[in-house]
Structures are given as C-alpha cells and as structure tokens.
Image 1: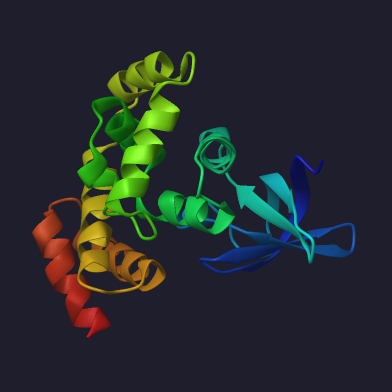
Image 2: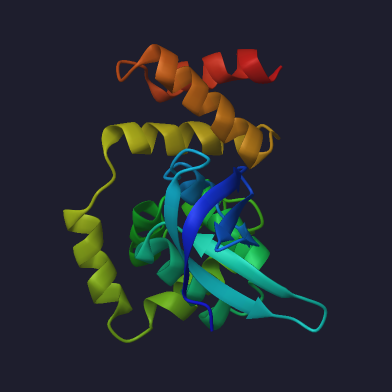
Length: 201
C-alpha cells in the first residue's frame, strides 16, 4: 500500500495532481478541499494517498490532511453504494467538519446537497457511520472544537448554492474563490453567489 508521496509538484488541477518522485510522475486524483491546500507547481510536496486496486487499473487518491483521507476511507469502506468518485465529490462539496456535524446531527438534507448524494444515500451515510464505535463521540468533539471559520462556511455555502443551480463543483469553487480573493471577508454568502454568477454566466 502506498501511504504517501513526497517529491515535487509537477502539475496541479482541481481534479488531480502529478507528483514527481525521483523522476517518476505519479498521477493522483484529489478533491477540491485538497486543491486549496496545494503549494505552487515546482515546490516540494508531501501528499497522503489511498491506493484503490481495480481489475483494470491501480488508482491513487491524494489528500493534504489526515482528516480528508480518513473521511474518504470511511465512506468507501463503510457506506454501501459509495465508491471513490462519490467520496471525492463529498470532500469537494463540503468541509470535513461540516460533514461530520451533519452526520452527528442526523441532517440528511444537508448531506443530500452534495453532488452524487441523494436523500436515500444521505440517510444511509448517517445510519452506517453514526453507529460506528467511537465515531459519533469523536465527531461531536471535533465539531464543537474545530468548527469551520466564518470564511470557510461562506465559501462552502456559496459553492453548494451554485451546484444547486446546476453548475459543476470545479467551476463553482473556482469562481467563488476568485470573488472572495477580490472582495475580502466583508462579503456575505449571497454576495459571493451573485458575483460568482457574473463570472460563470
């Protein structure tokens, strides 16, 4: 099992990176949550990985934090009907903290806003993850002590709003981040959505 890669970031896109490790380029699929944390292309990088072995391919999935990889593994291992692609969509559509809080609160409606997650799947996630030994207690503690910053929450809400309007996660996230960088912390979620729509239309 390849558990991490350490080398030079050769290519970075919202959906994947290429890491040069001693002259070998590893193609690694990533969620948007990790894309935000990447260093500049050409810089040194250490990325945590999960190797999925299929009949037709060996696929590497990468994460910039343990929390992201842990959630990815929980989803693909413990929730029937969720594969790596949907697990990446979950991490791209919400923060780990918000996801954990929704599971602990039993908020299927919030989970169902994520691309690839319908109401039935959201309810299954809550049942299958909340009942895992120690997970609910740990998540409640994490949700209380590591709540997302107001800025993170606004970005997440704005991206989810744009996804609900039919825009792709990658495009929505890119537009919202662009607007936020120009507008600063004073912008509300509504401001972010409104300005991002001007870029996307």
